[in-house]
Image 1 (cartoon, rainbow, N blue to C red):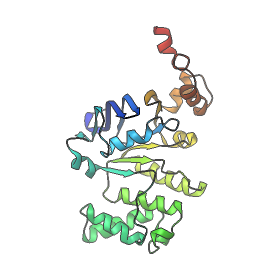
Image 2 (image 1 turned 90 degrees about the vertical axis):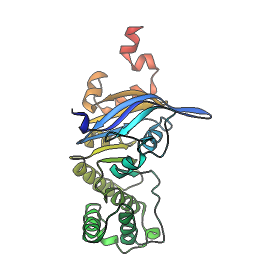
Image 3 (image 1 turned 120 degrees about the horizontal axis):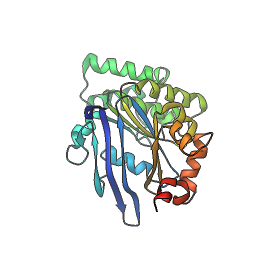
Image 4 (image 1 turned 135 degrees about the vertical axis):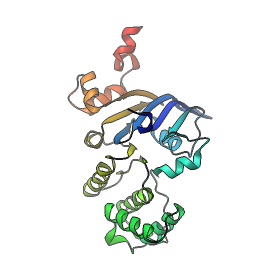
Length: 256
């Protein structure tokens, strides 16, 4: 793969907080046209990884490049190329959906017919047509999530960073979001966290598994099932995240 197609490049990233090390030497990459899931137990470093990739948190050591731009020294270039959806979507509850998205589009530099076109396309893509005039504070969690996703898409980003995008959604809403991600994944690089392993299998070419801030595996779901001789991704995931390191990593054990 050409370096120009490597849109997310995480190299030896460590993040220390006063009471813990959230990430310890994590490295992986995501290419254009690739959807990758971040998997791991609560506290494994998934949200920290996404925040660092989005430029909202600095790594203690290591580096992250988005479309070739360093998240520390070229922050504005990075912001133009990403759509970031945190787990708790920061919306303005007093605004109507269409007014909020119009405001956000203008912040991205969209004006006139270009803005109107993107508003229409993103609301249609995220199933917001019937809710366009509703006050955000009255929306269900599913519609708030869709509004946040539409916001991410307005400026046609090359990279999507999504923290549990289907968390709290009903099955129909979750399927709708997955359909959007499947369509976008043909030309973007998507990195998203999830606890729903069937979702990772359905959407992703690869998964990155974190445990206690360390990289436990980075492979396709099929590759993990084959490596650990399991029938499902869930069984492989449990071996990676619940067994002692020397048991879950036979390569490390045999090399000692």
